[in-house]
Image 1: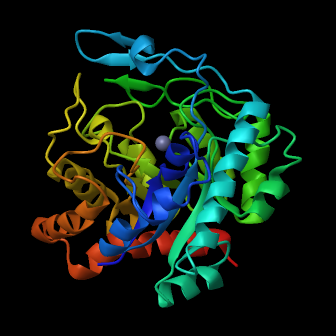
Image 2 (image 1 turned 30 degrees about the horizontal axis):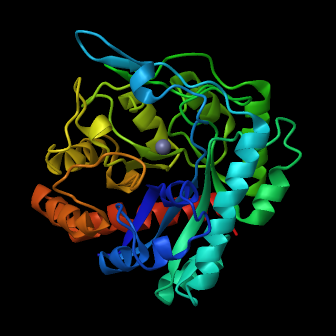
Image 3 (image 1 turned 135 degrees about the vertical axis):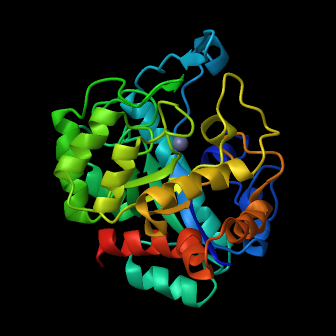
Length: 351
Ligand code: ZN
């Protein structure tokens, strides 16, 4: 089965090493969840490659920001990033992405339009969508938005789980719903409209609930969350409520189900020995609620802890096997594995 994946963090991971332009760390081998040879072998035909800027060293670690309670935990939001810092970091990751393309000898391509995407799929070229996770590298007056578009950005998450000039990220809290703060700022609302105009996909993962509904009211594109899970199963602030899931379906959008044990298993101390069926539970729940046209994979490989039974990207065939065992038809599984993402990109990019 061919796989199109909604989210990975390989670019962030490589650029944090001593050799930030090390394309071989993806193209040849990498000790993490993901590299090109293993992905190819697992049937991956493409996916969203996240340009995500980590918190600077001055920000206390997750462990230091975590407050435990009897029922769960709350991780205090990280402060907003400085524009210069985020901008520099984003350009580094974009440079790496194109270095990978260059060194792949035609086997890997950053796709910026539908013809190119189709060409890659027809010719077994792995297709990468350049996704900006958190709009901090964009100036609030949007002056440099066209620059990032020219660079190849075709998908944008308005926030990561921290505040920025455009909106308020959803914190990591368990148990909690996603209504954790105010909605989009005026700059955020302008950004939604500008992305619609350019045909850039807007990603709602990491946005709080009020921000989600602001995008739902304003956007003329399908609503998308690239890597989240269902709040009804695991009441974590980052997961989507049934009402949010229904809004995604009404817009003909899609939710990429994340593989993170924190989100699909939850509890006070989520464990890596969580069974991989937990991922399928969320896919099944969402498919039952809003239909198999609106759910997909959004692994978050190299950005989170995944069930040890899945291992790494080579675990995709196991998940496909479980979809079959759960009762999804081959046609439905194909939608979940690749077609839903491709449909939403087609409806959003338009050209
Ligand atoms: Zn993320």
